[in-house]
Every structure is written in structure tokens, then in C-alpha cells.
Image (cartoon, rainbow, N blue to C red; front, side, top):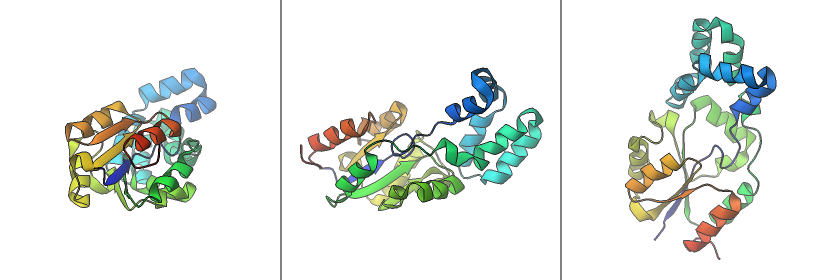
Length: 201
């Protein structure tokens, strides 16, 4: 029996789309060069592991002066990369929460950006227990982060159902016996929650 619903955040509650942001600023070719040459994605993993955002990005900008302005924008203009809500998800979250099931978050997020995200999208303040990579110093799909949620919540296996937009994160959870759903929009997730008996069909 499912005792807790575990929610990813990015591309589940709000669209995380830095590529479109940089394409608007640099054009498609410039954006592709930025992601290839700047090393920004590796730095983002550092942020998700808990590195301080501004200091880390300033240091990286200093090492990559040709992309320094664009690297700084990764934090300075982060809100523009995470602004668009996913349709129907606020309403679905509130519907599930009203059933009384425990509501957990499991997300790769930086310390500072998680606070910004909560201010932008107040639904993200509604979790009973948020498990955030920067607070735990490990990232999905490393099983260490799944173990941290199990230890913190006291739940494991089929007591947990997890929604995430990345199939590799769901696969890692299923190895531990969790139920999983690769996010396919609010309607598909609602149907799965109905099939699990959490919501009415």
C-alpha cells in the first residue's frame, strides 16, 4: 500500500529550460557553443551538490572569460529559466494532498535556487518533507539520495510512489522497490494515482 507520494520538481511543477533561455540570447548556434565550451552543466552539478551559487559561478567565469557574462546569468537570471508552470500540477498537488497521504519531494536543486523556486511557485512549500540534493550532498540517480529519503521518512519499497521526468531516476528508484511513473503531464500522473487508489478513478 502506498503511504507517501514522492515528487520531482523541475519539469514536473515548472519547466526548467535553460537551453531556450540561452537560445533567445545567443541564437541556436551560440547557445550550442555555450553549452559545449563553457562547462556550465558540470558546474550545475556542483550547485546541485550544495556548492554556493554565486561564488562557484564567479570562479568558473574567471576561468572562462570568453563566456563570463553568460556563466553569471546562470544564477543572476535563473528565474527566467524556471518561470513557466506545468499546466494542471498545482491543482493536482492540492487534490492529492487533501487525501492525507504524505507528500515528499526528491529533487536535484541548489540551495539558493530552491529558495527562489519556492518563492516563485508557492506550491513547492507544501511538501511534508523535502529531500533536496544540495542539502544531502548527493544527486539523482545516485542511490544514496533514495536511501536518504528512506532513512528520513521511515518508508521504503512499495510504500513509495515516485514521479520524475527522467527515466533513469525512476529506474534507480524501482531498483529499490519503489513504484515509479515517468512524468507525462498532469493527466497521465492523475490516472496513475487513480490506478494506485490514491485518487478516485
